[in-house]
Image (cartoon, rainbow, N blue to C red; front, side):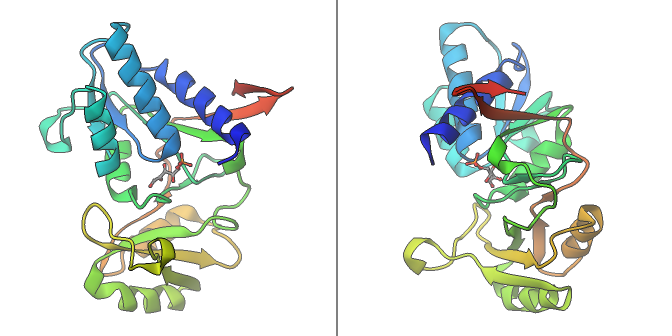
Length: 232
Ligand code: 5RP
């Protein structure tokens, strides 16, 4: 990550943390931008600026970080509501439709996002696109025993799906749920995210795909203006 991108992420994470109030149940997203938000929340709880906040994490990585910072956590099954969820994204289009799952966490991220009263997305300006999937592949979580079948079905829908491999191709990436991820490219991009989200999720063997459609309430964008980070 470049230093500029890092500064944009810092700024936008700090701005999002301002929306967290004492007593809230907060969905804690995954990825590097959400991690900065979790750190900022931990610091506010430690200093006493905030109190009685409960976090609901969306990944094992986020759970470890939040626990290290002393943020009280509850599972989705143990809470009655989520007041606010804050998460990053891999692509954001002008209608606030998203591609997520670059960190293979989109199953839990979507569960938390749809449950939240308010879903706020934190991105740096490099994530803004006109059409989804032209530059970032669409993640699809699949049952291990079904990945080739789903790959073939995605091909029939016009998608080139590749199994996500770990660094140095040591083996496939395995999700927190023990499944695999196909990364899919539709050559012309995604023109109807709602239709595609439903069609992919309808394939047997698919757990969830990374299209987040009509869920987002606000997108906070970190950018650099005159050499300084700014949030809009
Ligand atoms: C993980 C995600 C992340 O939110 C997304 O990949 C953005 O990550 P980062 O803030 O590191 O750019 O969807 O599954």
